[in-house]
Picture 1: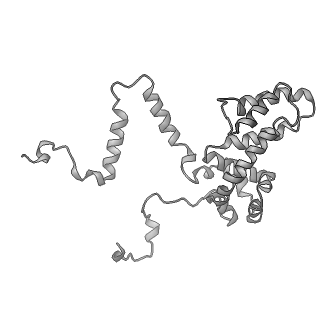
Picture 2 (picture 1 turned 30 degrees about the horizontal axis):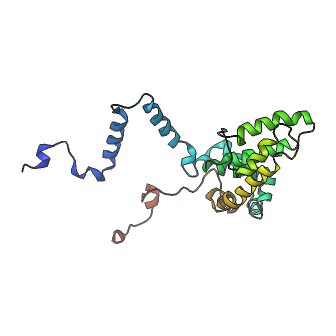
Picture 3 (picture 1 turned 135 degrees about the vertical axis):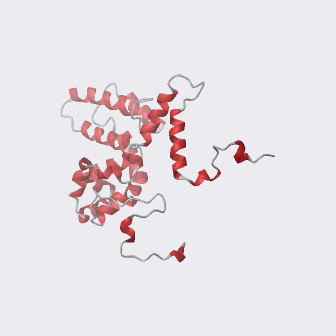
Length: 234
């Protein structure tokens, strides 16, 4: 049998460990269309690629943006600690509400806090004439089936809310709002208190320069300044 390397001289057996090989293959795959793909398949792949490049997918990157870090930078460690006393305390503070909203965006569940805020605004309506258009908007956005930002409600709560939309009153969304509140309090809130952005605020770290988790074992030139490496550890 002839040597496979001679038969396929372009095959690089050791390329699996070469990072440059992956870069070449990645670009090749993107440029090479899939035969038999349905129309629009390439567009879907491109959208997915763009989605994966969103800042939310890279921990801490979204905090580095000036518009996201300005308010958080003004939060003292003492104030951040108070957010951990209760979920109600967190939501009662404007900076706390903003920080929690940004956190939910990283989990793709921001519809919950947006619904809660919409309900709070709804209850501030001063006249009955304001209720109907607001109730319709909230229902179509967050509650009805296949709504663009549909929240997770049990069947009974959704049915009761749907039946009251025709003649809404101040308390029309109370049951649904309480359900979503408890969901965030028991599920998202504990994770927020364990998240790096929140812990950085408590420790007084500058949120515009978050501590990023290394994806692989890598070093920079600064890591070796004034240090004699001990190669025995390798």
